[in-house]
Every structure is written in structure tokens, then in C-alpha cells.
Length: 360
Image (cartoon, rainbow, N blue to C red; front, side):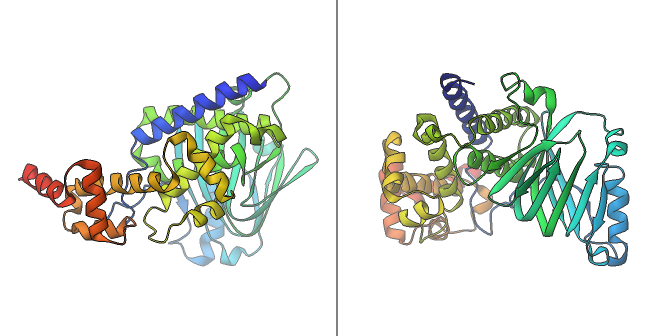
């Protein structure tokens, strides 16, 4: 993949992904105890309500023998815990997996039972895991993901309790995104920077919104997730990535997503944003130059829009205007009313009265 193709592809992927997620309303939920809880994926199996003495055997029967076709040796089978949740994004299957310490093995007898040829991509949230395949050992952690073949023999060694998002991606469809011979059979993915970070955060965001998305949107987002993953693997750790305009746009999108998740924090500061996103204050301001707003202006604009949305929601009418403002990061009700009127042309109380009148 040459540089021009990379830039065009990345711009399309990130633009489409952003539009689809925003149309699904994923950035508009009020982050408070009174708002709707974040959506979750469908539960496949959990040991939670089983007798502890029966958990490991039940896991082996339900999951290892029928769901994924592997052998499992648990370090502490008498104290076993685990669950699997799942969501479908077109041809991409996403799983949220929690496991106790164990070793997982797939051999030829398991592979013979598979009805599809695919890759696994894992993004760890907790613990660590070594992936052993074809003479390689991929050491993974919350900062390092991995891709490996689900259709070839492998061993997975989980240390302590382990939680990860897994993607099952069809080999033929994913391989078509690479030049001939460029598709890695097994590789790590740095998830602390660049497109690796974008891919991991995109994956986590889709997991949290899975049940709220329509099937058509899920299918499109599955394609876009594969595009981002392919770009991340194709670029690897090339130095020129950090200087690329598309990479800057990707980083800006990542920073914005982080801010959206923390808008309710009244102590949200530019220093905190920069520190948690691995950039300097100077670089943070540089990223927002393309938005024609300063970072502080962008944050204020998003808080005001979220307050507007909350005031229009009938299920939140028990909350006062001041409560909504405080829950979305404002620390002064008078300041909130002033900037709200400046942006929308009327006070938040007037908007609430109109909304209540329209319902009655």
C-alpha cells in the first residue's frame, strides 16, 4: 500500500466511521446515574450463577467443546470464573471475554471441526497473554494487541484473570485489503499510539454501543473496523506515520472521543486531557487548529449541546436545569445560563418550559 493510497483510505475510513457513530447517537448520551445504562453485547455464557464446583466443567462443555473448539487447562479449576458476550458487525464477530488463569490449545482435531477460515484479533483490557503460533511468541497486554490465525494450531497462555475484546475476521475478506503477500500471519499491534490506538478504541466503542445499533449500521462499521485494522497493520511502526496529516486527524478523533467520555468531569483540564492522551499541551492545541476552535471552546460547545439534548429528553424532566448542568461538568449555574443563551438564543429554563408544553 503506497502513501497516497494510505492517506485516501484512512481519510475515508475515519470519516465514515465518525458519521456512522454520530448518526447512531453514541456521543449524545448523558453520563449520569439517571441516564440509560450503556448498551452491552449479548451474553453467550457465564459461570456467575453456577455452583463453584461445577463452573469449570460447565465452561468446558458449553464453550470449549461447542463454541470455539479448544482444550483448556485451568490453573485453579475449583475457583473458575468466566463469561463471553458477543455482537455481530456484518462478517466481523466481536466477543467480550473474561477468563481465569489458564492455557488454551487448538490442534488439528479442533481445526477439523471449524466451518470458517478466519483471523483472531485481541485487544486486552486486563491481564496478559502469550500467543504461541508457528514458532512465534506474541506477548500481549493492555498496551499491545495481537492478530493470529484462528485456522492454524496455537496456544494461548493467560496470566492471572484475563479480559479482552476479540474480533473474528474472515480471512478472505480481510486479506483483500492488503497487497499480495503483505498480510501478516501473526503480529502484535501497538495500541498506545497511532492507528493501533484508534483501532482499539474504535473496537471498545462499538462494543459499548452494540445493542443500540441497527444491523445496517453494524455491517458498515464492521467493514470500517477491518479497514482501520488493515491500515494499522500495514503501517506498523513507520516513522513517517507521526508526520502524516491523516495520522493527525486520527489522533484528533481519538482525543475528541476521550473528551466526550470525560465531559461530566468538572475538573477536566487541558493538562489532564494532554496527559491521558500522550501528547504535550502544545501538540493538543495544534491538533485542534483544524476545528477552528480552541480546545476549551470545543469542550464548552460539546457540554452545551449535551445539556440541550438532556433538557429535551422527557425521561430526565425530574432533574432540574442546575442538576443537568452540574452533571455535565458546569460548576456555576449562572455561567451555564449565560453561555447557553449566547449559543441557543434562549435560556435553558425557557427550553425546558417549551419541551414540557409540547408534551402536554
